[in-house]
Amino acid sequence: MVRTPTGTNPYLYDSTRIAPEWVSWLRGTRPTPPTPEEAAAAAAARERARALGAAAAAARAVRAAAGAPPVRLTRQLGSGGGGEGPEAGAAAAARAAGVGGREKQ
Image (cartoon, rainbow, N blue to C red; front, side):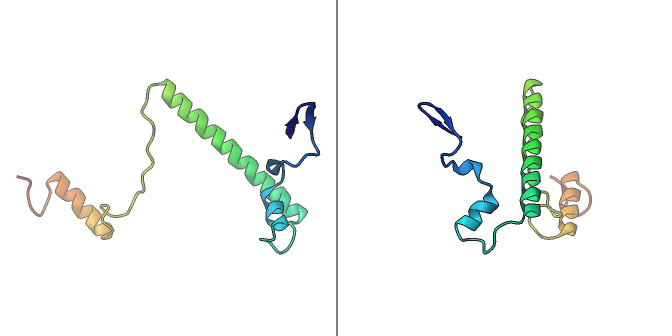
């Protein structure tokens, strides 16, 4: 809602109150308006995303309160990071452990 000097006016335009699927139809980026079923599914998906975001924020707060470092997300590859394939990843792990091939000096 939009705050006015006299209070809240629910009839004033506020783009955050319009669902994205309706905005796309109103702007002409979508040929047909959303069906009621589609609008309900989109609203449920937005609510799930809000709940997941709140859960993630709560988990970060718990870790921060415990003094744990923040969790870093990294892309896990099947290889040693060079994109050579799974065999290269195993070979890199073996080299790091000093098994097979060249020995560490």
